[in-house]
Image (cartoon, rainbow, N blue to C red):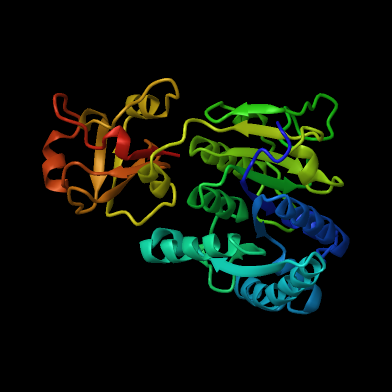
Length: 358
């Protein structure tokens, strides 16, 4: 990879990179990340930072807040810690004569078209000046259905929204290994395709203070790659890691992008509101998830449906075990689809051009 190959990148920094073992902020580590982002910015690279750490910062400031309900405690610590975290970033970036701008988001901001466009326009404006946009989940109001899986999902959505060239996810490991890191037979997977099956390598372990783990990182990385951006999984604790991975000088896992999809598919990736759902059989699921073939969803592959959707509405696609596997634009309304469920000879219920498989 050539130096400064990318014109626009999103960098997601995980909790374990930004905090010490006791959960308090690691100012030295945050300073190193800030220095590297400033260096990229001064080389003309548009950089967006998705930063965890607000809850950890709040825990450091108010460690005695243990008697609150778990959800309320997270909301409170985030509200307190976000101020501390952003003040630290402000001070560190000012040393490079750069400003930073704060944007807090929930899943609803990506589902609502107006919120989505307002957020995108704001970030685009910030990228044209000497500003580093910093995004984090709005934990103070994000509960239940408003929550992202973690900031890996937020970073993936932001990367797609901005048509960024690459997403770099920094955690406390070098990338995806063939076994649990530290075990004798563990080998770093340096290259991965967007559609390659690598779930067998994921150990069921998550970070000490964060919500996510390698399973989420892998899913978000491959989804982001399928939507047209390269993804790099790397160790944010390594010195100069951002500069080094962009010059092939540090260990990491690279998930290579596929063909850039249409703007419609990119919008579908933000999981906008749906009006109903259809459950499909195993044959239809295999067809839709086959990376080597393009498939639409036909009524013959649908075994059940829910909702009073109309033609042109968005519907969720569910596997036989009710796991969501995609989303698409209905070509029939619910009353038209009902009598032809499982039957051959009808046109596609969701055409490939208006269908996104996760």
